[in-house]
Image (tube, rainbow, N blue to C red; front, side, top):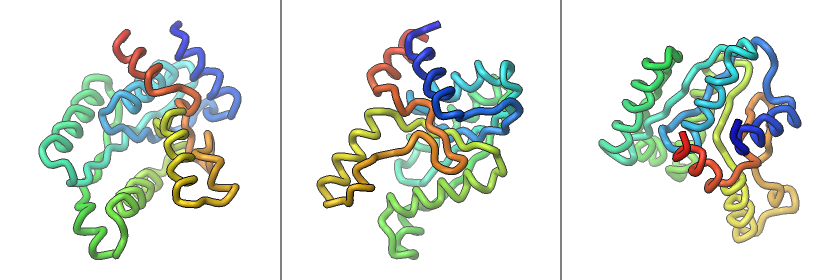
Length: 177
């Protein structure tokens, strides 16, 4: 077992992220972080009797590249026998209509979609590097003490098994695989 998988196992256990028999919706974009998360959960599925649902959101922002990423995730899920659900969204148009930033609108749509799947847990691939960026961004904006805490490992039914792994560790593991 690789060092990063041991680290993820430790994080999952420390925060009691998974229970036997859970249905887990996994936010998968096709990037290294979310693909490692998907593969980790695929490896744990039998051991923990998990039912996995891959949730992919195509926001209509990056054109054909984004559509191709969604197709890649769908094909990967088909080849691994994983339930695949996709939401297509016009984040730019929706943001204008709702007077939000594109980022806010896209985030709201993702979380609404994930919640609509009725899973016990929603697994997201935020990592230690994302967490550091979030804290710095919030400090620059003039956050409160609470805002300096960054991204939580667990919030309600949202779990982040990669939260104690760096982007470099994740990419190293992806290359190894």
